[in-house]
Image (cartoon, rainbow, N blue to C red; front, side, top):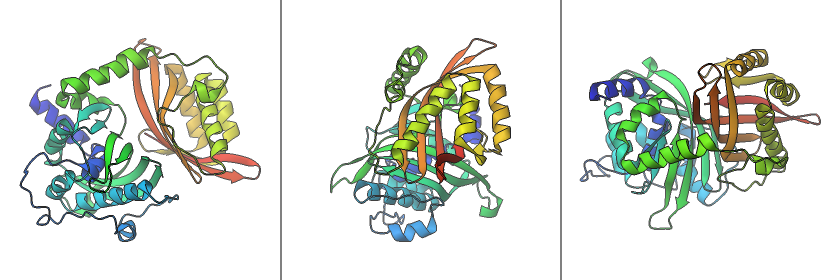
Length: 366
């Protein structure tokens, strides 16, 4: 892709790239201006100010966060939002605190090394004003996190009230490196695979390009769903986490049944919807539009006539309280062109106990 076309692509999708930016801002590694003075740039770096920051960046749908690495991750997310909103130079200086040289960030499905990721962001952010907003969800289980949050974007120099609000999701794997190095990111997934990711492949190194090709072309496109009635084996979780909630087993069962009913065809899935979703549930579309259940059923009927989409397996199923965060892989066959594509999706589900029935009252997908 020519550089001018690449820049145009990045301008258009710069707002969505904030998915990666937030964890870039939370965990970035300084690649430019190695002589940046962190104190001069007013970089915030403390594990002790969570209570203060949570007031500034509230979680609309809070869930329990356990002591230990989960609390550290919570702090780093909040600290990242604050450092980002203090300006790009502050983010760069904050960067070398929590990324490592081996960290990987998947931006719109493009697998990038840290250096490549920063180059892409450097071009985009010179042409965007982006501010962090509130969290809708912050699900932290063991060393994994799924977040769903608001950000504001617009032209450089625009006032806050002139910016456009959008909502995005991401999932990240962390590691505790001990007292000296602290909690850092291992790999992050900012948004899911789409056309913007194709443009970002311009920045990929050969190693990251080969790794992505192996996953997509030699694994996902040829993946066979296990032939078993045990749904825990049929739809395995790549990165399992521990569940402490009493209703976690029931929630997991519903999630797996949803996968299986989808793969068994439209009639099976509509039956699952009618059984499991509340009549007044909200179900967001990929374009962030909230739909009624009647609208959702209608769109699913239309989708199933155009594509055969198989839900394959999970990267994560995060369950805490009455919320669940999903990151999963799929394979899609276009029934008109016979073209096969693969990708990933992220989803947050809200569950509520209504009488004897555990129901889904909200679904947001990306």
